[in-house]
Length: 287
Image (cartoon, rainbow, N blue to C red; front, side, top):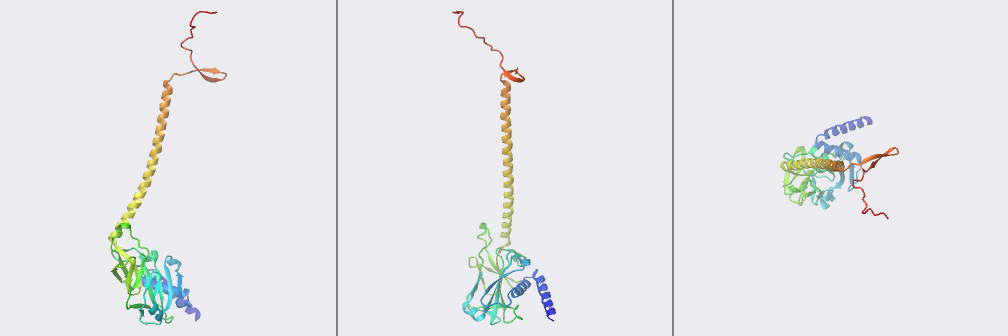
């Protein structure tokens, strides 16, 4: 009986893993099961960093268990999420656990907004029922009574030329729903429920960025080729000037008076011709 139960659990895990490769909601369920399998008895109030499976390398997962009363009174700062007090999980439960996700380079694989492009990784804040093991994959929504949740994005990948472009906050809900809102804070978005979040900008600007990088790469390549050509021309010119000077020296030597040669032993040595002007005594007086 025990072996059959283990086999069923393994089959369920594999099937969820297969669905997680394509569906964002299935990915949430898979990572939730994976986190629970890694930490069978999580302690309340302790933050756990979960290493994602090798197939999902680059995804960051954190996990914490909370009591609703404490959460209501104190709120919580959870990685890039700042959750104020006076927020309740819905439906109401005494205990719940929160899973933080940063999808990193998997962001655009699972989430996209038509006519927009992501300029930050997707981060997720998900609440689950922790009353018992049967309901642990039941997602909870939030009831925000006063101050909203703040989602901070430390790095936004926008070129300097596009600083004035209107960026928007994107919240991805269940079943592929997307909610866009204007950014009212620098590097932060406002949220009133759980979900996945990112900052996006219009696709036209993104295409300009793409063209910029393409032209930059082309310009860099042309610059390298230009430097090589300049160096090559410099070497050719140097050799040409050097050969020209040697040729001038050879022609000049050919125009000068040639010396005769004479044998000294077995070697030929240069020898000057006879002196043109013979010496003459100034007078014939011989003492």
